[in-house]
Length: 306
Image (cartoon, rainbow, N blue to C red; front, side, top):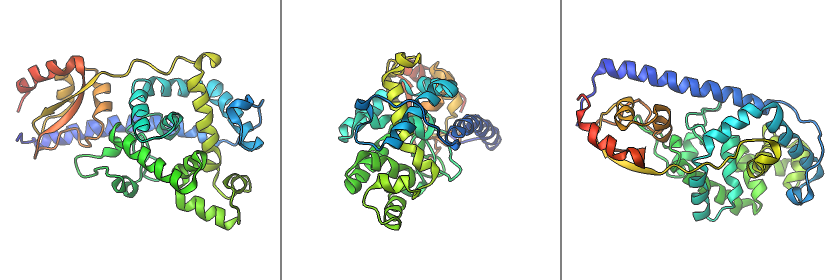
């Protein structure tokens, strides 16, 4: 077991906090998208919006235009960040029996930012609160927070969405409940004495954020599937070819990134679950690397300072 120098731990933790702050600042800018009220633009083709109330269709049309014009820069950032991990998300959702289009919720939740933290304290790409995360098997302790693990959190999100569908038997209501919580949706329906979620939503039973959430998801799904129509860059890039490497405890993440030869930002993204800038010192841990960098890391790791 490697012993961690307290001074180095302090300064590395400080750098790590600054790194997370920068990601959080970007997240704050992105959250500003969802604070404005909608206006009506031209309706979308019927095949994209059937079975939804007409008012919802108008909101989808608004958000398609909003994300592809006024907030185009943010949308392009989401596309760049999400492109290489969405194939993994689709694989997990398929294994769990979920519709593929649900993966695009990751953009609305966080822009695929594993370091995202909401004002309410939800964390990670899928914005889990601590209690919900633990109930779906995610590890949260001093050293690790699997809400920031791009694979573990996606598996948990898929299981949570599947449970919501079992409650409501409607994927769109399940999506709204992912945002608001199933308890809040059920209370809203009861308060308005409605069996129909959409009627309750249009009557003001839910907050603006939840009111806009499903249209935002459907709009970003349309953009992701038809980027050329809106002059956006293609979303799907080649998925990362990844492998895990088991390393002794206590190593600094930045040192491992340098030893692997990988881009540091990508290394931190893939290993975002480690909270302190170091691997836990008490045990060995696994880190994700690009397959092409695996042998470089294994070759260089024992030349790192202990």
